[in-house]
Image (cartoon, rainbow, N blue to C red; front, side, top):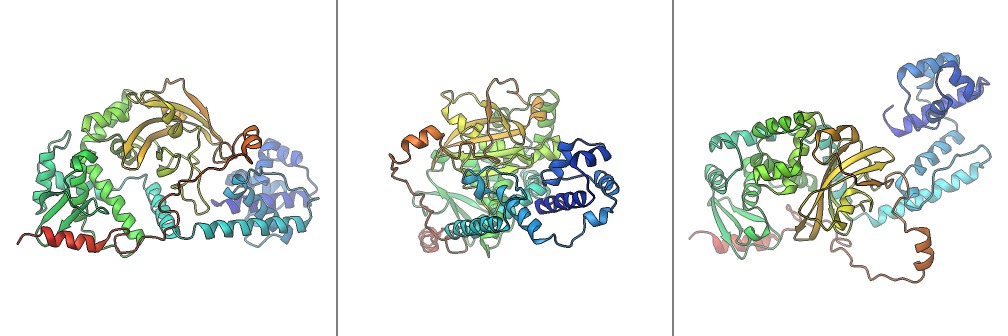
Length: 478
């Protein structure tokens, strides 16, 4: 009864049994001591009834709970109505700006059939357009589901980080560059910086000679410690050459996670977070400064530990200045926009969400806080804008309204309203602007480089292995 189709089917069976018993919605509601509006939401599949309420409904209708939960299919008309209702809740109807409507008995079967056929064809065309990166999107979606099931916490990676830090006798606090070099030495590597590192790589490891090559420009690109630790993490974890894109993606996530766990060890960070929660003063900025890491690393690390150790469900977003979501994580029931596969990455973030509004702020020194009312409750977020090689990105962390009390910034007056995930919201231009400019504008689109590309080939997608081998041959000790 956890899937959407089950709630719709159960609701339809209850309505059919109620009508067969000659009862009105109000009479059934009175019999089970519930409001008619509550039963209406159950019959339309908008709310999943608890077992005790199902038992009461069954008794009032003179049937059994087994009959309500039976697996046998409904009649053809009921099946079509359910299919249309499910379609109305999906991304295709929302993208077209079609608001959900009640399917009256007077709607002909032929009309329902036509709607389903048109919906199916639109979705087929959307799938056809999205076919080239589908493997990547499916792999990313499966990985996000795994992260959600584990509250984005991986104990085996935390243990591996603790083992490495103990081996180099790291006593806590910010991890220094010297300690990063000690970790490399512990693993049998020496560090070398080269100006001609292949463009498609962040680092290259010469496993035969124990040499780790990094770009000589790494200091200009960000945290040099992170670059070293990311390069070493695959060796720490014993990664083999990936056999699929899913395995490659999993290895990348594990590498980034382990890097964060080395820079901000669980053993030291959890007491800091627990103390901050007790003082109602949790701050991503304070974590960033305490461990001398980037805001994004601090935000990621907070999501690793917040639910497991603080009991706080969270969400995380990284959004490009164009509005495209590039990274996402959530276990707090926030509804982010998704494609038909359920993937969040690649979708447009709502213009009214904190992650987009922050780009309009002139003050880039202080964090931006905002409460956002959604169709699924109110959320509070803290966000920052940071530069990257692909342009500006915003990084934001958010929680449900009830958990805001633990955070610095909860007294912000900034508020927004976003119904992006359940309604048209900002996905279509305001009507008056559309009328004025729809036929009078023609944008010259800056096509994303990967839009027409198939999934990069090779064991390490997008990496030119010839470049790598030629680089190693040129730099190998003689």
